[in-house]
Image (cartoon, rainbow, N blue to C red; front, side):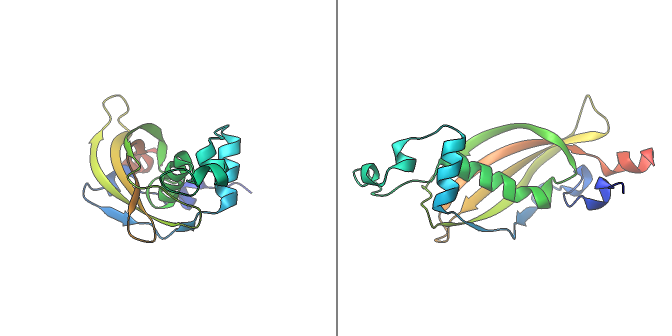
Length: 163
């Protein structure tokens, strides 16, 4: 059996990503101790802030912080199904990454993405460049992560011309 990935794509093509559009992603996630521990260990970031309850009792938060790069990766991952799954050729960059509030074990993260801008690619006429702003909030409505991401998006019209 041959898989037709175009039929499975749930992301939006360049033409479908209008600036100002906001996606409120249905996937939510309660962050567990295992998430934090595994991500920190896999990335060799064994900072005491992520691993040591006794040390964390002496910090300004009084408890362990979830690894901020896990928070960033989670927020980006949640967006894929609605925005770029099967419709992007890759990320071109990230900017303006902020962590205004910490994430703690047991927090539930909700994510939304806004299409900030788009333009046609100068070097690849079958693609366009789209800038997204993603914001993640915890169960208290506090923003815990925000970032801008630029993606190289496939034009749907280029697929129709190829067929």
